[in-house]
Length: 636
Image (tube, rainbow, N blue to C red; front, side):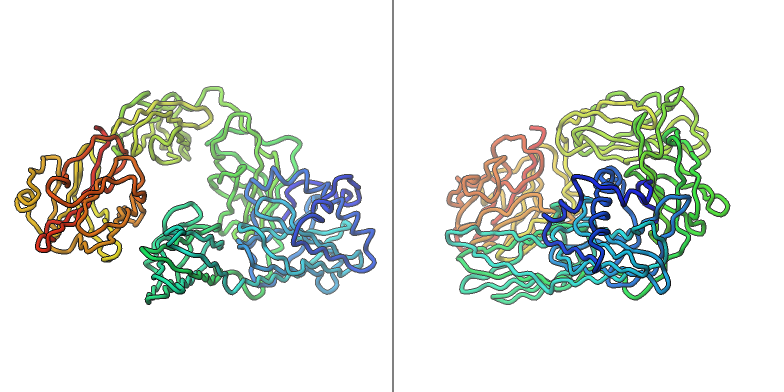
């Protein structure tokens, strides 16, 4: 895999005042291995690494460093310069905090290579380096390195002293058996606490929660690195009074920090939380990489072309049986074909601003790659490709759909014309790209307005940009089909039937076991036409004190709640716009016909449906009239 920067090997001999070695000396943990008798070489190489990579790597790392994945495996490959350009090989893996990485690189028998290693952290900064001696058949080692940051790490293998040749590199990753956290809930402490767990995408977690000397403690939520709640359905859950074990939970939402939230309903308890991670599948065994590494020739000036118009890139040794992946900067291009012998690649550059100069990277299916910075320049077309978006302005109600058209000045080429779509203020969701069909000048797409009102600018880009203004009006109705009301304590869940909708200002009332006329008669009020009434036939709510409620989407995303705990015989009416878990957010009174207000309440402008009232009934035989109410205010 050729280097990310064309540089002569003589640069290894240049000295520099501010070297990588100085920055590495401050890093921890850091292990620097230098073969005996090579101190002078080490100093030269340290300065050379700084000169070659420290100043130049930042702008190329953002362009998606690629390479074959590593795990606990051995790879045989070679450093072979092409067309006078020094070669480097890169290997990548998603690692998480606490793992230990060991890398050994050595020249194969008879190889004159002097291998060197650089370990790059997820931000592209050198975290460790290892330099071999100058004798033929040298070796380099990154001794056990404790990973301090979760993300994609890169091991770079390169040659020193202008050497070339074959090498073998061995990787070993040792993962921690488990991590442990302790805490206290209830009493003077919070009812919930969260603990961070770093993991690589594809890891499988087993989480054990043990309460000590107190009330039961439970796992109440797990969020992914993006902050979204994840489902625990694939995991096996075992619950006893003092212990909850969540087994075999796949962490599939990316590499990063997951968060486990634990909670207690009442009382107080100390607890311990232990997380054991089974790392994702990583390469094992031995492999030999093809010597046919992709190569990009040096150019006197960048290639020039238009976004969304095919361009031919001269190459060497590019895969043909399975097309390579090509990146322009950080964006993936559309690959059309590879020429005979891998002599060229025809691609459609992704959209970018006129005048942009970006790197180009080629990645073979085995992960070997080649990249050049500043390799392609976007030029404006004599006639701008795009004419307009129609309509040029549109008002649309929240959550509803609308169709837009992109009109172009010229018919799209045989490959079609790619158009990128963006919008400000998150006013709508829509495809990020559309394709105007070949030979036509009109493309269309559908947008869905945001859930809350506002305005923003919709922009289509394909060489030039055209815009339309979207104004989102307050929602007229919301679809509650298959939303869930989850009741803690009694551990009951009510799934709202398909086809259930609320207009703005409407209510959903779920009664325990009463018809609408019976319910109205008991509470002494007539429910309006804006009230959807459901008789759960004795399944929900099941109130006997301390209940809390959560409103979720069909996929389990928490939309409102938990509410505060209910006291038997009391009615709880929400102050609109206030957080569900705060006592001051509720008007609390005895559950009498005078205090309870099913199907009514204060006017507000809260954007999403929320739990607005729930009520127990003090009289022993009247439990059938318990209810939970959901309100949709938007549009009032």
